[in-house]
Image 1 (cartoon, helix red, strand yellow):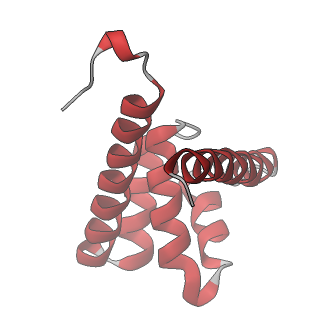
Image 2 (spheres, rainbow, N blue to C red):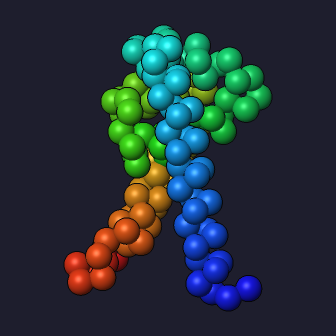
Length: 117
């Protein structure tokens, strides 16, 4: 497969996944799952064993597309998973979101503007 075809395929896939994730977060937001720490905790608990993965995903997503204040996720993480695991999940999610945000900036910025290193 040529590099340009692969690049187009990856770009369209990333756009489709981003739209789906935005719709997922919008749906959760419209239901009021991000209005308070208690509502956010109940929402995360609803995922059972997948709760840590969903929590990390939401933390990463809120760095790229700020849909909820950061303190809600940080407080909810500590209350849901304990201080150590909550810190680790918050840290991983926020770092992953930062990497995604910088990568998107480097991909989407015009070539003459330069890259963030």
